[in-house]
Length: 122
Image (cartoon, rainbow, N blue to C red; front, side, top):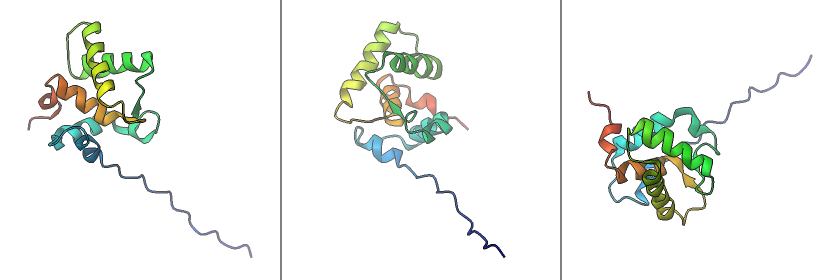
């Protein structure tokens, strides 16, 4: 009789403390805003590559500008002005070899005073 294989469990998704990562740059971050960004990014955060922002990739930064700043945060400044804002955040987080997307997006929303727009009103 063949032996039964032990049921293999899928490894649980590693719980990431995004709030702690944001606290590296912001003394008292808005937890609801951090949670809103995590919800917005959803399944993309499961992918290591998609959970990071590459400040050296023009395509990536254009995607941040168009999808996050223009679409989600509804900013209407010129591309050049928005690119300056993104560059400022890249400079702020340059010490981190891997730039966490949740932190990056939080810092951008904070820079443009849009954190409150991320939190759904009940």
